[in-house]
Amino acid sequence: KPRGYAKGRARKQSMKIIVTGGAGFIGANFLNQLVTPLPQHQFVNLDKLTYAANLGRRRALDSLPNYALRRVDITDMKAVDAVFDEVEPDLVVHFAAESHVDRSILGPREFVRTNIEGTFNLLEACRARWGKDEQRLFHHVSTDEVYGSLGETGLFEETTAYDPSSPYSASKAASDHLVRAYHRTYGLPVKITNCSNNYGPMQFPEKLIPLMILNAVDRRPLPIYGQGVNVRDWLYVTDHCEAIWTVIEKGAVGRTYNIGGNNEMRNIDVVDTLCNIVAEETGTDPGELLALKEFVTDRPGHDMRYAIDASRIAKECGWEPKETFDTGIRKTVQWYLANQEWVNDVRSGEYRKWMDANYGDRTG
Ligand code: NAD
Ligand code: TYD
Image (cartoon, rainbow, N blue to C red; front, side, top):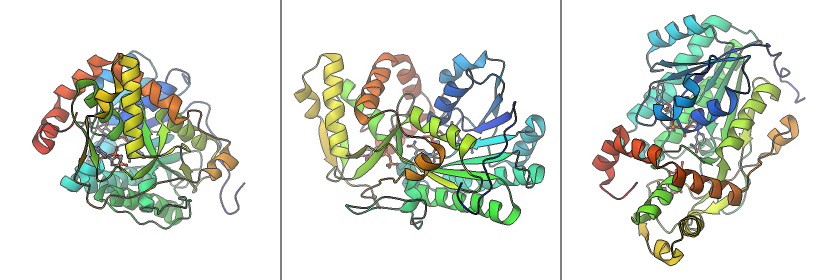
């Protein structure tokens, strides 16, 4: 047990759990993984249903007795209070956020509102009802982007100084600081996880991996920012969700855990791999897909490299990722090829309108 931290909280047999952002990419995977195998807990998905949410993906859960959805904007304190009074949660798992770096560059206001003010509202709702009660827990889901950019060597550790580059990562950094301050100042029981880039089923095609898969399938250009040499660590989404639940169960209160996939890749290598797998899975000539690559203007403030030292979560909680990039990326390509209805659904809604207005027809 790390010194100076309370032991992992005594968990109730049956918890009322608010999952914010449970209609988003990671939140939806989290609910899909946990609601059925944990019937003793009640799960309430608190989501504004922005462009990034797709209720289509929730259908399987809707019929389960231990799942409910409440359409709530976390920047609306009254609505947050009402749902907290109704649910009286023991655990809050906070995913809800504006999550795309490029959007934060084009329009940062929503990021400040949802990611900072929204997190603040949830913390206030918890503080008012829980005080220091260690039977309760606020689990904050954050990103490794708060640490800024690495050079060619080195890894982000939990003690690495915050140095965010984009409005997105700055807003997540601010929310992390608030969560930690509520623990230190008010004794609110919290845990924080900072993880690397997720990929897998149900991710919107504004993000690199699904964008490249769908554009390759459609024979549209594959836009690579700069020279494609920026490095990300890729974490399969189900591994991330398992890690979060492990930290909820075994992590120490007040403590931060980094989560990584041990899969550092240059963007250009990710795109080449995707072209080859899409070609293989669809019986296409890989050369035809590789020829779609286009080097485009770089993202301003583009972080060069992210990489995670995930030894704390391994040592203290016994978690390690199960998927390698090879296994996870093939499953991901297969999921997008098999779920054309989901793809059409996503591409025809609010998301499409915004992409058309801001990117023209460059992206998926
Ligand atoms: P996402 O954009 O796919 O989904 C976000 C969800 O939050 C959507 O369902 C949306 O409707 C909801 N939401 C947005 N604003 C809201 C508001 N004001 N009130 C209530 N709900 C609101 O995001 P994601 O990729 O699933 O990311 C989930 C969390 O994980 C975020 O906090 C993100 O910062 C963090 N994270 C993501 C990644 C990644 O690679 N995707 C990596 C590290 C950390
Ligand atoms: P992204 O999926 O937006 O995640 P993040 O910015 O949070 O890391 O981008 C992953 C990497 O891929 C990042 O280095 C930017 C790059 N990228 C491209 O080269 N082209 C694209 O069209 C997109 C969306 C991203």
